[in-house]
Length: 349
Image 1 (cartoon, rainbow, N blue to C red):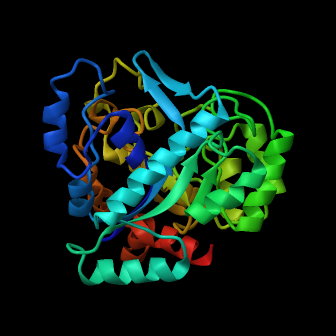
Image 2: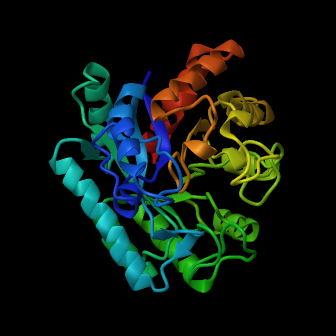
């Protein structure tokens, strides 16, 4: 079954950690085993494993974020540097597209053509990516968003961790700044999808009120199961569903288990069953599976050491479908969660 993963930091891993994603995960791990703490943990994502697991379509990020030893969430000090970093990530995707590994998808016709090719010959088709930006410091000004749209950007999450020039994100409190409202207006005019992930609560509600365009939450879990501002409250889940959003299941263990202690807990403490509990909570809350998808965030600043213990690489994502099947979900619901809900969202958007 095709899998649509709504959040993968592919270029960031290639540039920040010097990972050759065209090589299998095993070879990348062997290479990195020679270095002491140069990376957060054993990687789980590479192009061969994406293909083996059926992850034929993904939102791939432009991520203006540094990761330095003992300081995992370091932001660029200037928008100019963040902008340049995002251009570097775009350059990586374009280079891999020229190599025939990836295909950048910018509109509905391209999405439909990609899916038709993938379903006909998944072993031969390139991996399809939709470009998303996680955090907005890479945008020099709201007026520059048109340039990013021309470059292929189709999804924007204004927030990441902390405060930025446009809004407030995870771990901070506050609403939209004046430039943030201008940015949302520019996004709406360009028909760029708003990714509500990481928005601080006040910024979240103000963004939904100010923005009338299409919305997703690419990699978000449930506050009812694991408390914290990084998670969605039931009220937020209902509000997103009312806007036609799809919410992607994230596989970072601290978002799956309320007792998880980063740097101490073992991955075996958490399983994909725990992850599916979050999807199931949303389905039961809303009475439908149409707003659920996958946004794994695998290798998003962590590795196998902080992923579910029964997941070795991204090729294991099909196990989510097996769990849903055992829990009595219909084939139609499972196909929607694994890919169909996001595909239909982007066909509309």
